[in-house]
Image (tube, rainbow, N blue to C red):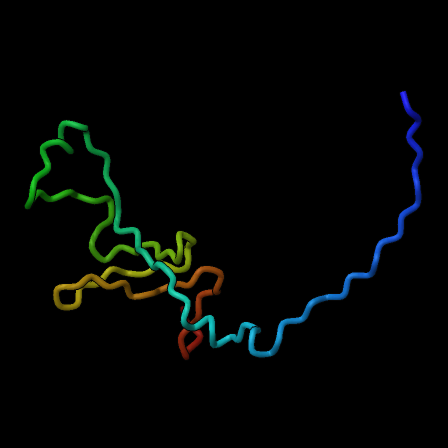
Length: 111
């Protein structure tokens, strides 16, 4: 078997590559990024036989109650909690708490 000898090696200095000013990302560029926002309106467990019987007009009872707080997600990550409200024919969520922010008290110092 041939003998292997270790040899010293020198590496060339690598200079950082800087992007041209026009190619850099600006904070305003992020304002145009689209995110998926979703709200958890509840869930339920159903037997397969009940799922197979679902048809147009069937009503599925969810675990959340009207006026109950629901979780709001951005790209699947928790962002806030809010109350589901109906405005016209559409469902909306009124944000009540933002994740990571302390509850803010009103002007009198009460919560």
